[in-house]
Image (cartoon, rainbow, N blue to C red; front, side):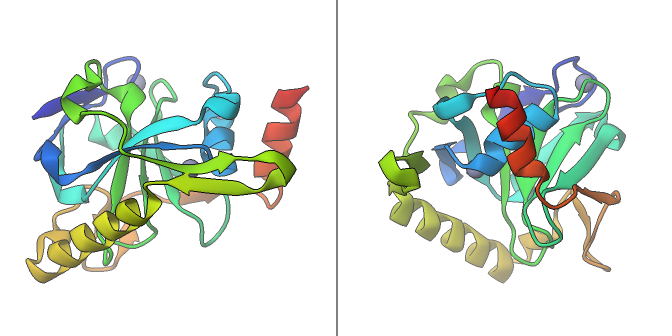
Length: 189
Ligand SMILES: [Zn+2]
Ligand SMILES: [Zn+2]
């Protein structure tokens, strides 16, 4: 069990089955813009670190009612944030049927239990292109965990959705089109 917490300590919980997930760094523009949107320091080209797992491995001890959620578009990932202090906490897909959740590792006091970063996504290259390291394994891992979660029914154990309706437990704030690019351009000034 690895404990996690928002910045102010109101939202607290634990991650179970650490060997099950994947420790990754993501350099994509959406992760960067999400940090800027929530008032965190702009990670710039350094990317953000995530621990990818399935929602049934995440449990809350307190502050679950503080979670709020936004997205950069009507079909984009859901980005879950603590409303008490603004800390960005989780990413999930938009519906519970494909069980996937990623915890921002800034929310873990001691990340040594997660092991080294095994994959890197969206590494910027010259000319605006991207490359991925360990991404095949990462994608397979995500598929595999989702499939197992689907077969054993554990996808229904999620703190993020009402699995009867597939709706998130709280209303999604969809940010206006272009907001992601605007946030990055503004921060780069
Ligand atoms: Zn990303
Ligand atoms: Zn907080």
